[in-house]
Length: 123
Length: 344
Image (cartoon, rainbow over all chains, first blue to last red; front, side, top):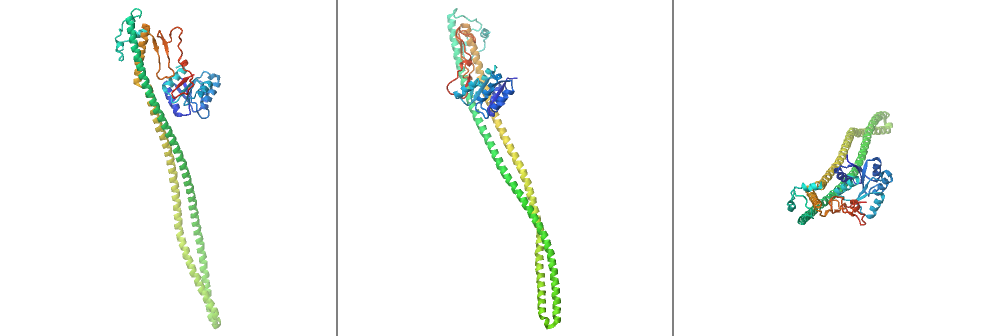
């Protein structure tokens, strides 16, 4: 059974694309449609090995979600990467400060995403 | 292990025939023992590196081209699907809204028509009852007219018996007789009219009933039609969604196929890996400079540049430490573009 990756994005298409890329690489997928759902998913699934998270989402944006998740000391080591159309250095800095470990700009390259996820989850 | 690879190297290299001419069973000569051999090995190694660079460029171009194209197509399909989905959803919502409005209007109209027809039926029944009552009254009037006529006849007889003194009374009795005739005549006319009305009322009632039946029939048809349209709208929406899902699936499959299963790239990667091994073994065997400049042509930002005189990964010249790939990535101050990967 592959490692569990949580995909947080309000776009079902993007979730599907990410899911397909990671699924082919042997990862298990869990999906959330916004930051709130993402926080709840992390809280209820201790097996999550990594989170791939969008920035602009309804209810709770990705940066706030990272902050919320990282408030829990148990999630300090949980790698979170942002997958977004945004590329502004200020936002990237905020993500880094919030506790994200990476930033990928959409449209993403599936092989790159898989390589990054593999690297951060240790395989 | 790595030396073993050199010794076991028997596969023909179509890209560099000179590599093939290298003695396969000979042990690795030292550059100190044979300067000419070393020069030759350096030359061969240079050609291997050159071919590796060419293959690297080809792989990079092929992958970059296909991935960029597929990504562009994928984005385009995604955009079309997204817009179509949105259009279908909007059209469906608009259709449902308009249909609900028209349906409500028709239902109200049918209900009002039903009430009107019911009221008409009651009016006709009431008219029938009234015409019956009027007929009864006509009989009473007839009876009065007959009694008045009898009275007038008696008065005429009495006036005749009185002789000339009864002449004036005879005139009155004549007038009474005439009046009773006129009343009887008027009563006949009323009876005729009432009879005509009574005869026409059942026909009107029948028409009203038929109208009512048709309204009920129309109501049922409307209900069926409403159900059919709602179902059709649902099917249309679902079918559209399914079609779009199929389009998306196909585009994902195409993307996946090109990104993960491009046989040309895979073959080139294999050839390049073989050349890399060859280069590494030559470096180890003859003390040549070894450089593994890239690991994955996809990972633009994850390039690993490991340089060492002794060849093996992680075994570098004293004093020169190899940085990890994550260390190679620095947080850029410029805006990131599509496909960029940053690891903090």
